[in-house]
Image 1 (cartoon, rainbow, N blue to C red):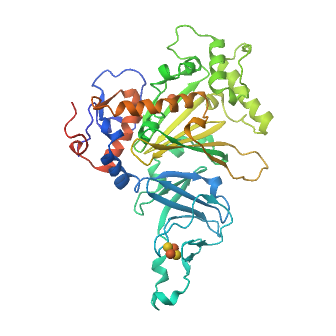
Image 2: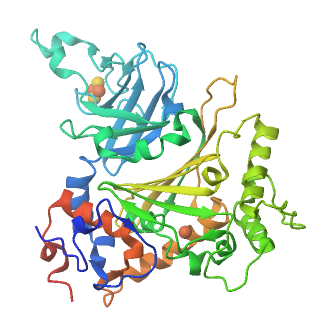
Length: 446
Ligand code: FES
Ligand SMILES: [Fe+2]
């Protein structure tokens, strides 16, 4: 199979730390632009990718109690995730085996059984068919065992619930490679989902995900961040399905010719001040002798968490609070972790190749002594969503980015090694789809 990429093989990238700037050898990696708008490519993704990959469906908080359910949809696929009376989490294809109607939509609590709203076939929470109205009409040999709901693989990483429609797929633990171990020091199990937000984005799902898979755009699109982020030494590692970028905040970008503590303070407050409960920079707080602005910001985050939520972050170092771990899990998931926050961004295909569904989930450390609650889920039109200054800048760009990739003269993306995680998404897509370039582009790369 041809990878239809120029500039290094997949194996070149795996397991290697990649520096952000400079590619001494080789040439840009070229990827056909048609992958971002072609209905044929979108059809291949629907046929060969989405039914075979592990993908985040919801949070554990959505299905924490017996009788909780959540319907996960991606493209034409619908999966019903149910917490059984025995406490087990199960998932099924959301289709009644009578005439195929879906059993549940949305999410909810208190389910005792699954009753199809069309003709009333009844299933228990294990997916077994338990009731068929007027069953004599189906004959005396109706085999209920063979009419159980079709199971879907379901598993969790920390408070995140993943599903895979392929019964023969590798386990989630295998799929996630070293990522859970790499992130283990952050104790993800103590995070709880407090809110999720869903919106429709005017771009292909990959264009949305790509924006969360490289920091190359920070120097242009997010200039406000340069005062408090080292975007140059942000190392990346690619493992296979997964990759990571580690970005240190609380220091100024080496790109800035002049910077001081005020630069860092003002930039941090402007772009992430809510982590300290501060929205206006005001006077720059003095940095104690022998300390640093990074230490000072870390302490203010700890103080904010303790004073407002009773959460003790003293066990985490300043670096664990201010070095963002940005994991990318093929195909569409970005997981952002620091000691005080866990945020999930997920892009799914929309109704057409130039549209996507963007879902963000926000997690906070559990408050000691507080029972598990249900997340606050909202779905909003794009012009009403507010993901904060930086993500809003990413989202505002999408419409124009999609218009651009559809122009006939724009045949290929030209990618830098700094965009290694975008390249890795395409290499995985090629593996799952098994395509020859000519199927999509009508010819070799120019
Ligand atoms: S389709 Fe479900 S009972 Fe008829
Ligand atoms: Fe961005």
